[in-house]
Length: 294
Ligand code: CP
Ligand code: NVA
Image (cartoon, rainbow, N blue to C red; front, side, top):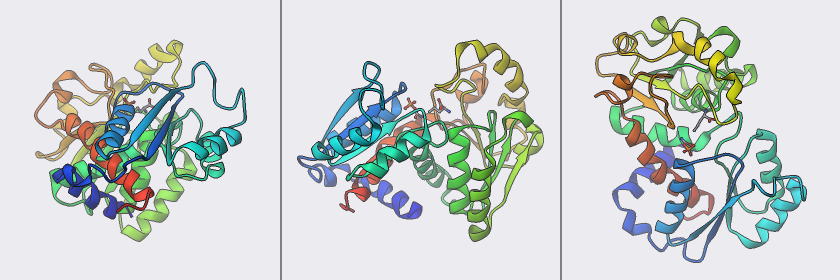
């Protein structure tokens, strides 16, 4: 399935005009409990370019599950739209939405996963390295994080060896590591959780960083988190431990001087804006797959 989505996203990227009318009169409802630039814009632009329409719902004034149950929201929305996408605080909430909707529901980020980001990242890695299986990726920073969890699952499915370098108290969730280990057995890849950043990036093809201040982190935790994660900042010195042709990735939004230095994110090895662009092409593939159009 992952390979299939990557191959369709590449085709769509090469010939977008072939898909211009494919979703005529189809509507996506997008529900956001947290802010977004890339996810919102890429899904909305994607629907427009496919000939359909997207509705953006900011639910600040009517929080999900407050005025009516998530079940009722799911059932009602399914009567109007053909597909839904939601960015929610809790993984449980998106599962409730999906289990009660009669149309496909896409996870646009929760506290635990960010699958669409990692699917498009795999497309970007494939474009840069011409393969996936056998590559080595190291994530450096906050290990108990939606990007890390989706990277663990995505990399282990396609056979990328993955190491996570993070403070002991911020390691990924055990049950996600267990799921990834099962995938890794099948794809013959390796998963490592390490607390030493230099060792973890040694000879890797890809260094990946994500914000230390995820959307749900309260302001008052910021100072303490900066102290905790500082030893895990991606610097030019750390990048020098990776392969000479290693690439640097960050799903964005990024803060220069926190998870990486400006020199790294604005440097030659950084591919962060290619990553951002590919969100658009991959979202289209995901939508078309779920609507049985490809
Ligand atoms: N990477 C990503 O999902 O960005 P947004 O939060 O801007 O959607
Ligand atoms: N870990 C980040 C990802 C942002 C796209 C967050 O949850 O805010």
